[in-house]
Image 1 (tube, rainbow, N blue to C red):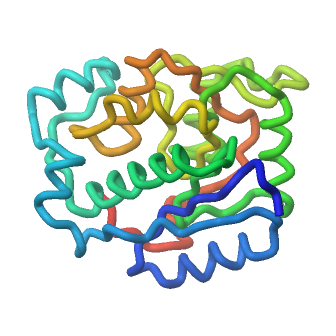
Image 2: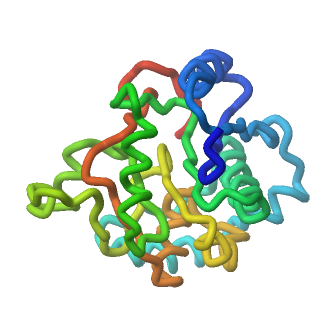
Length: 232
């Protein structure tokens, strides 16, 4: 069993087919994995919601200035979105407490692009770059990735690229160093935005070193019409 990395899977218990899917992917690899499945939307109480999320139009608008003209208009988060945020906080706290130097966080609709996907993850780790996190999924789309990475994607021998802020690309698949977790948690809650935008804002104010992998290692099943979704 690999003792350097653990896989955490953000899971909603209502999606039983996704748990079967992710279990089939992870059960034959030599890495410990754990489903983060507490705090589904049906299980949230007001006390927990207030701890993790603050509905504030002024804070929302202040933070989204980071996106300039691409900024979203104010919207109150749904319970499903708050649930995902709570699960990410729980995941970060687990990573911080456990002994693994690296963590791979996957949403439960992730589909590996490569049969030996962990070999691709290990290549990123072995590069020993100064990154804090690497987004290793397709995210919004291949076109979005290509546009943001730009012509650099044609450079040979490069495994990942440092991205300018805002630097997230959904939260479908993220490789993170344990040493980066305290920075992420420092000001993360209460959140005012959906989790990927809130993380982007926190990465920005903490001046974190965020990379995107050159190759997509995962794609998102819900975006590719393989799985249904109850998100916005």
